Length: 308
Figure 1 (spheres, one colour):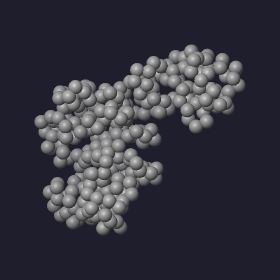
Figure 2: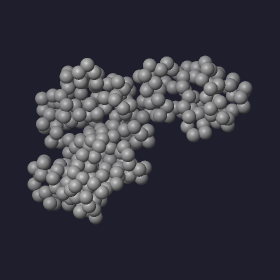
Figure 3: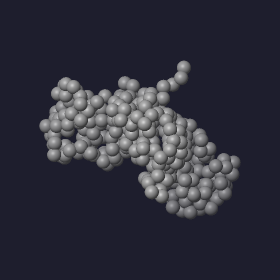
Figure 4: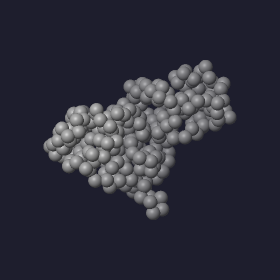
């Protein structure tokens, strides 16, 4: 049985003047999945999202979003997509209910009062319906923005770094809501900088300098980097970093609290170096499974031309 693809694009490119912002983007997102879009600032994530939802026209390439052509049928895409921007974009001098009513008017929704009430209840905003949006905390603004995205019952949510600037509990509550929506059949494409959020996605893609460098499940992305990883503890991290940096097989050293993660791509060479160094230094070393963060640091270094 074939899997229904909500997004299926190939070879998308976008230039802004001389800058080639998105390069040959090929992406498939399945119905009902949470797809994470990761990469450093300026990597082309936002531009890619805007091309997918019909806000930007690709310079070249082809494909569909929700069955509509991403170049010729952008108006149809916009009607079926909810797009949450990085920055809060609703009206701060309107109440929560007034904001949602305004959005409902823009979409021409029938039975607006009932629709707004349902949106307030779904996102647990009813008790704050008369509060001005400008007085809300980051977490409540985030919840209001999500309610506005959902009010026209979209089939696809495009969320551009939706949890930036909110506290850990608000982030956790937001992701619980995202998983609930996905279980109801809504497809979600979300960009994020947080590794714990990336691990909550069904599949991931990593983009840097406009190029898609890796995609798949978290396990597949980690395995694709072919990393060997070791944990170092029981010694001063600063001294250990300086000594380890010159050893054969060591590609990069990343601090994690009082321990270090040492990674490389030549597993036998790295193991030999780690055992020999541990015998000299008295530090504790042990092989570990490389983490998703290890994999993304490796991808970022490669994109920046750092040899590993």
